[in-house]
Image (tube, rainbow, N blue to C red; front, side, top):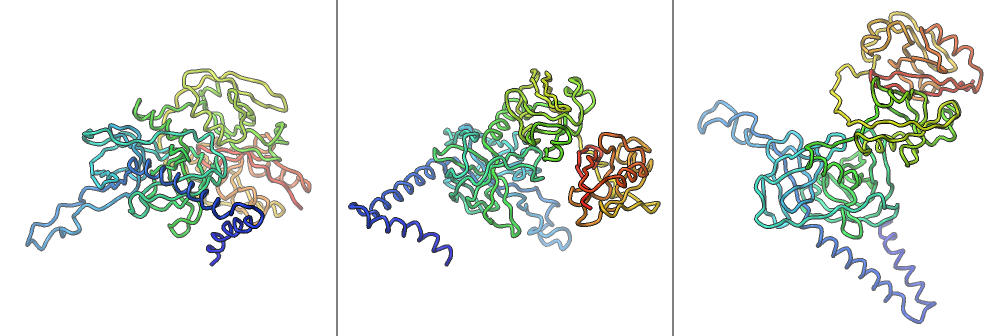
Length: 476
């Protein structure tokens, strides 16, 4: 009933306006609705022929048992079974299709279903795990040019813009839904390495993955990728990869076989007001460098942890996620001037951008707490809600940390200051207030000397490849 009242409300508003105008308002309202409906029809007619359904399957696990043979695997279980069901959009008329990598990854057979129910076999031309995008190519060139959709400019999107999503939710081919842009620049969701999502309320469900998100001109401004849901169905929050990223990935795979991205060898984190004040940054805008990788471009340019990046080239930097995107999209083998704030002073340094090399998976990249054994009773600091102990050589080796340096977090009390700033068991505190911590005793003495409302900025190693600055305030 509540949904009906929301639909009736705009019509009631139009009716109220009729009393104050000589021309009946409902007529004008109907004309507007008819015009909007006509535009949506035109976009849908233009888009649906270029949107495909995709099914990916595995080959049989075992051969079927011969007829009459009681042994072996029954034929019904030996048949191929579906691995993925999703959508895609034709970008090039000779049969190049853009979709999500998770729809087709590790598939032995990929089938494309066109809007007229024709089917065609395809193979993976290339994929990009950092963005969950993939390019498919038809196994046989089409007899006639295929209908295509072109990329729009996702950088020009505004919250509130009308959009249309096309795809195959739950296998229902060429379903069209509409909504608005709810937000742009969604990141740090822990879903992908590169995150700059468009958020929409247009209904997106399983099977929509890889389908296009279109603007009012029928251009691709996003590739539908994920939803936030506790039930598996749509709950009002859909996420799409912006067309600017999708175009870069498509062009990179087609031209080079992979995506060429920039790299300068830094890991950064967001600033907050406490970290900005501690590092004497002009504002919480910017990206705080937490790690500088050895022998990388940033290391050669003498950057160091604790520096704040305020500009990358001509672009102002507002967050760590934005800096990651700017670096990835920077031209390789070219010099970029980067603005740095260090100890309250701002200066520029030239950095030579190199091509990013895909990092190999490291099975040791885990929290020390997963393998830690408390050999002694740690000292607990009640006001901060944290207990620490010395870092043993075994844990130091696991974390690839300096032996006998640092203190490992052995306990964190729920609801405490340590808990609130995200410290957890297994974290290693490497330094405090930019002074190296050699053992748990040194850190305990610092904690004991802290006064009420005093802030200690800790440099924390959370895994072999992750170090962050953490401000912790004593509240009692």
